[in-house]
Length: 221
Image 1: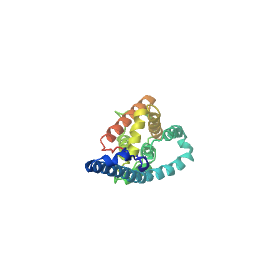
Image 2 (image 1 turned 60 degrees about the horizontal axis):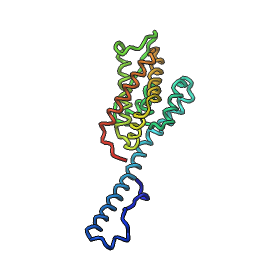
Image 3 (image 1 turned 180 degrees about the vertical axis):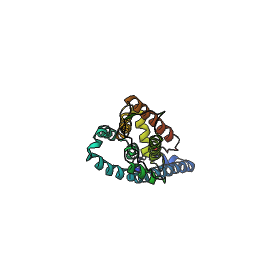
Image 4 (image 1 turned 90 degrees about the horizontal axis):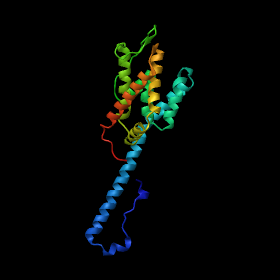
């Protein structure tokens, strides 16, 4: 709601016939509507400020990955997600798996210790959730934590509601994006993962994000 849209819904020709009590009620209604509109505007500005820190970080990282050919595999799905207007904090939270600097920037924003990850695997192996090196498991768990933190700590009400709307509507693009990021991460470590397994993990992450967001006290916008 904007101030320009406000209408007291009272016919001015009838005002003289109203009692003092009615006029007072109208006045209170106007005050309340104006107060709500003003609060909405101020909250929107505050939300915009919160969003900027992730917007700048995403812009920096996009430049980095576009010029590096090794990231070509994930670009198509990434651009599809951005075209749907998924928010930069969520997009970055997902990308953080393939770039520790991004992950640590998110963790810095959320007052958490940085990640140190220097895993090497020379022989090729198949990903198995029940039999995976603890370093890999920890890195993926930190990744999920970073995704959730990026949308639930110091969050924007407007952006967070947008994420929920998109996740409840989008049954394909975001799943493929998360799946591709996970595949790319493991591929760099000489670990293969089936498409079905990576999609199942992707769906699990989406459900965890939705559950975490729905625990927040999001204000109506």
